[in-house]
Image (cartoon, rainbow, N blue to C red; front, side, top):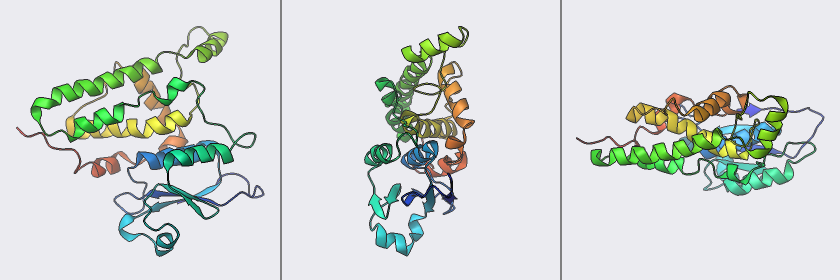
Length: 249
C-alpha cells in the first residue's frame, strides 16, 4: 500500500510503515496503534511507504530485517523502531517545523482526554456474566460522558480565538482544538472501535445526547487522514468476533 506524498525533488530519509493486515491479508487491520502512527505520518505530510503485513504469510525480507517484530513498526533508513510511544516522539523530532507540522497538543489535559474509555470498553465487551453487564455499561457511559464534557468545554485559548471571530460558535472540532493533534491519533482509532463493536455485540449506542462525541466522530469521518487509515467496520467486527464474550443466561 504505497503512499506517496510531497514533491519528488524533496529527497528524504527512507521511511517505511508496517501495519497489520486485515482478514483478507491486504486491507488495514484492526490495530489502533497502527492507525495512530499512520494518522500521525499522514497529518505531517511525510513521504513514506506504507505496507500491510499478513502475519500468516510474513514476507521473508521482513523476517530478516525485523525478526520477531509484529506491526505496527517503522523502519527509518533501514533501522527498525518498534515502540509506538517512542516512534511518536521520534517522528516529532525528525519531522518538525518549518517543513512539517508539530502535532503536540497545546493543552496538557488533551493528552489524557478519554484515556479510560478503551479499558472500560474492553471489560464491558469481554464480560460473559449477565449480572455484571449493567455495572460495566455504567462504567463505560461514565467515561464517555467525561470525554463528552471535555469536548463541549472550549479550552481557554481556543475560546478566546473563537470569541474573537464569533459569539455563536463556542465548541471545537477535535480534542485539542480545530485541528487534529497527537491526542486525536491516540483517541479516535479506539473510539471508532468502541462505536462499532459495542453496537454489533451489545446493541449499545453512544447516546445521541453526547453531542461533543458525535460532533467529534462526524468531523473525523470527514477527514482523509482518518478514513484512509481506518479499518472498515466489518473488519473491526471480524477482529472482535472471538473477543466479545457472549452473555450466558
